[in-house]
Image (tube, rainbow, N blue to C red; front, top):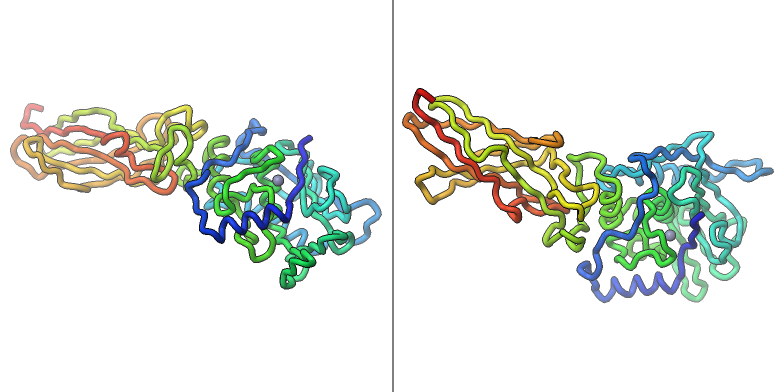
Length: 373
Ligand SMILES: [Zn+2]
């Protein structure tokens, strides 16, 4: 069983200082370390709330809303976690458990000064614990949950009365459980702007205190390990420093065409086909050769006798077909005498994916001939 402890105030202060002096990305900005522990894509992870024996009242409403919100809405966010990672559901009989507990030592590590923690990472019988500060206040810190009253007192460093947002803590724990992100006690040194998997949870009003979803470098590792859930969805903006990745956007894409030359009769239509995909390389793990569905492929054209290209004379939208061709485009000409045109196809790129031009154009010719043809 893996266990871990959240937070040290010193580390929180260091993170805040780094932001104040203007440290930006560049440094690091790589997928958070992680391991694939679930064999299945989209592994179901049902969970239940574990009210302690003898307790006669359920947990405060915010415990349910924050937990269910973090696990079933924030976690699988299509915009922030487009990966085939585990999917949570709240059920009465779930193997996973969530407990709001007044223990003053961490149920995961036995250490003091805990806020929330998790264990059983990468298993269906995971456990998430949220500390009940009202019943068991920390004797030295005066910590509390923002969620209890929907507000926090003014932070007093002499009392260290920090308070925390439950969904921010929970999305971190879920990262451990469902992707097995940062499976070490050291967590990650990526910046708060790129990850929710640092050792320290930012207190109220510090950068990232109310982040509810994965950050780009968390999603990047989830995608490398588990692939994208939706091939038309976004790629994480954190692949530019991985092996085989490059600035400005990260992963390479590649546009290819099925044939280098097409020949048809004058007055008829020629249809070119090909593939637009993430580059095929083991460096990209689950993302290698993914179809770039719903992306636009552009075509430049020139007469074979000319040296001047006319840009963007046509476009087409790639599909999610895989393997094989996932784009096609019909071309005609108004010419009445035989002619050959040169075409070159390319994709402009996006966050997480470089333009296909880095791998060269997809080049082909179409010849319109007189009969017999
Ligand atoms: Zn952690």
